Image (cartoon, helix red, strand yellow):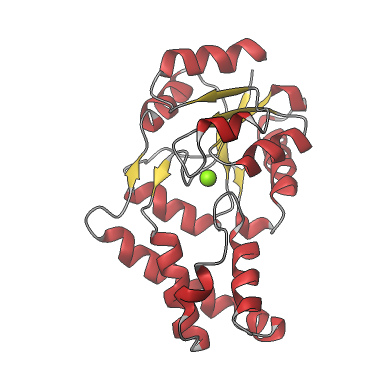
Length: 232
Ligand SMILES: [Mg+2]
């Protein structure tokens, strides 16, 4: 049995910039940060965890770390409220090609699967819901668990080990993601990686990270499943 850990943005969901937009509004609302989009324009978002992105924006906007951590709770609530508002608009989010079918097939095959995403947990759930992905993910690891993506990979596997009541060898874990960071986090943990070019990184650039496989998208459900099963 394999464990499949899936990234959210660019892999399962295209939230058409809702996350970035909501973060900007939260910085304006909570910290009175003006001209924040000029700041975020210089920040790389893809493949990173929310806490790491937020810390970089705050640093560039001159918001002291102490002020950021004091306001962590209201900031998160404000971000989630804006995110929900934006995702609720038409065209707010869509499931990427093959995402729904793959999740359905994993469920049918009783293959354990969960999320491995830099989104905070409630943000991930809002995006999936808005994209019409209603699957239950029994466990996973999220940006709300920490800023370091490599560490999140380990946390996700450990959570499944307690759910499944057995050890999960790293080579049984497959990470499905759209960014170089997903591939690197998989390698750092000894997992296999399946890179999909439905996000912000072209297939050729994903190849350069030497994932175990690269696909244009997840639409060939049968071959994706076969590949996942073959390596285990
Ligand atoms: Mg991604």
